[in-house]
Length: 203
Length: 261
Image (cartoon, rainbow over all chains, first blue to last red; front, side, top):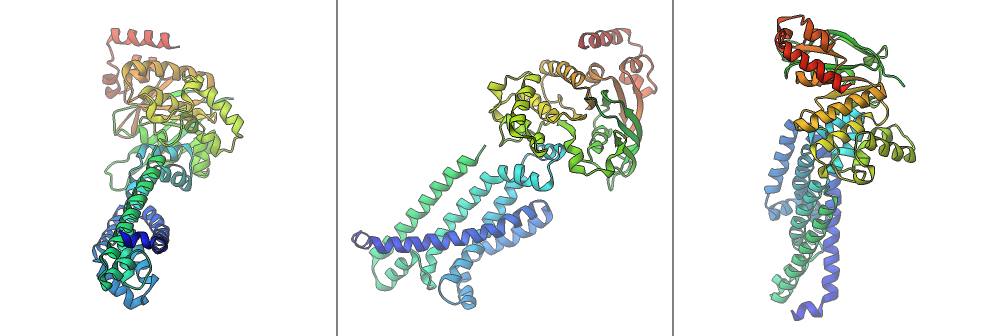
């Protein structure tokens, strides 16, 4: 513990970098998964294919994927960022599809019958009701991303993984523990916050 | 304000792959302010026919005209906003309050907020719900009967000149159903909105209808007032449906209808 207390500033900087890569990756992943999920939700056959492919992508071991990405993008921020975007796709898109398809068909029929346009049905009825499920997906994706982002330390990125991998190289168990505990604390905090948001948007 | 006329002329709907037409060559006219019940067993095409009026289902043959304007030539979204719509499953929007649900069509039409708020309270009173108590409730905090009252209020919110109702009281218990039926007759009379009402329940049809359209396998068997239907059933199918010749049954319905009006 003495390491952690002596290096609080450094841990904070690395935690901030950790949050940064996770948040950036999730933002980009959402920008892809939301339209993709909405498009796929209306086409059950396509949804099966899309989720199947994303699911397969999700099963690739993260170190193996990173090794490939380092070949493509070099060391640093890029490989871990791309890996996080790719992994998050599955959980995000799956929950968008599930959320949209879970909307009561009677409400969609009523919305059409009352004269909402296709766009209004999506923005005023389907998406608001899918939102808790979508946020549930964000929460799961965020926790996974926080864990996977520790590998950034291995491929030249920043984040709490730097402590873990430096600790391993330098035979400093306290550094490893400090990095692991900080990453875990971050995951628990984000999980808790997103659970609150999820409850807030539930009807 | 008076209701619109709704005119079916050879209306035909075929679903791809289906053996026979869902709706075959249906012609009749609902006069302004009339309450016409489409009656028949499930699968007879009565809901499909109803849904051609606001173009939730498109015709493959013939036409439907509201106030003499063929609906095929009107923008579907605008058409739907001008026609009330209520369904058995109600379909209240779960993430909106009762007031927001009722306000949906007036909002889509761009009514000023004060006017909408006043209209919502007026409608809640019309359907027998205390505005102060119900306005901000969520749909899940309503009983089945209350939800359907809100569904009716939402359907008539923008004072449509035509109203489409698809088994709206099919899922509420018998006691609530007869109250709602009585209130619907009163509301529709007051608004003079032309109403098409789908049901498989002969009892309900006799209570509500100015005229009944009896349907079977996509076609019309008979269009008649309830009294005519009881007195002069046109086909063997209708005869069986109305228990023709059963004098007790007939006098019971004459009595029921008198108490409703």
